[in-house]
Image (tube, rainbow over all chains, first blue to last red; front, side, top):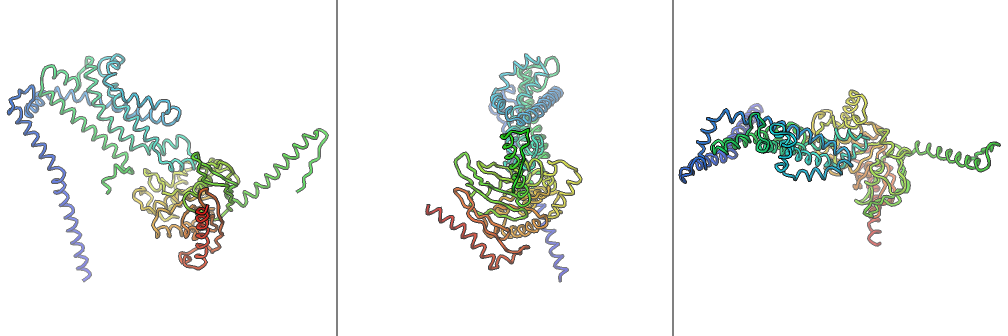
Length: 286
Length: 296
């Protein structure tokens, strides 16, 4: 009697478990992915139809198939441009992350420093970097250096303002706890303020990573290539002059994919850093 | 005491007088010091605290705390009980008067010793640190041998019954467990004086009772002095050896009740007539203050 009961519950458990496994897979596909996929296919077919229906030439609005053909035929050009833009923006992003966090920590370590410099950091943030880009080119010369500096400048301020906000958002009673144990200024910084600022820093990095690609492309528009090979920005300029509209679309889509992948990478990194504790990274737990 | 200081021929009279008074002063202060160090863990001397907003948080508060006592500060919100407690931890300074801990200003004691520990109302754990690392924090900040620190942290965690959760993170724990970690963290540095600011206020009744019993055990075992802030009359009577009943606006001491119930205290004591008597007395004292305020 007892045995069979145990077996029953075991069977039931197995059934429940199987049901749990099967059902969400199919239903999440239906709920989450099916809609966007259908929308995407609809969008593509509409796009394919409109130029033929309205009789638009391919240099005004190329069909998706034209874009695909251009991508395939000029793949070597596109691939090289992507590679260069990735290189520039990664260096720009890396610089803005390291220097941004470093400067924030330094500013936050001294009240006087922060009070005197933070307002300028905010004002500088509002300057459109595109407007000062020519100055950067005068200082750093045409080509790679200027492009990296422009990419860095665009990504730098979100990191600084977010990190500083985080460093100053420490819970009051946690701060008092450190006072009670006579923590030194730098102990407080390393063991309390920086970990507490981590979510803010990560938010800053997420903003700055997509901006750094914008920076690199804008940099290429303004600073040219300085003799070397050009990135996406340069390829776009050239294609625009030659009215290679289909290839322009390829470049635009490539830049978008680049931005998305960069963002996803940084998000993954942020999840790894915050995984152990921060609520926004914990949704899978609930 | 009669003190005679003979003037030698090298001193003139005024020098002699200065010498006499300074000698007397050092003797008296020295004697005073000995008394304080021996008997008083905490001494509030005519302490007032007025905030910038003009609120009188504490008004001429005089209260000695003897070593080894379990004192509750009982009162409504706004009676300055937390303010008083925070001053003992050096987290606030009196506007006038003086707070000493073992005869010293608390700020000095915090700088040089681990004598004072504070348990906050919310567990106040660092969310990015595991249970063990949270308890290690005070030891880490003071430096010292890493291995010994870890041993010490594990032993206090064992004391609060969390030995199996060393690697858990605060978010994985219940409210009661978080508070246990917080208490363990306070105990890790072996304090002589444990300050607790409504530590159990956010817990459910059953968890609260368990933690109250455990706290009393730890208090007896570690021979500490405990200052416990609460607005719960039953809690105050159950835990304390002495209750300081306080009243609000302005915050002041309204009466002191010695609770002469024997330790160890058991949950069953709550139905004992003597227990109810103390609860009545404490409640009456609180109510009187309310009435007085209304008539004013």
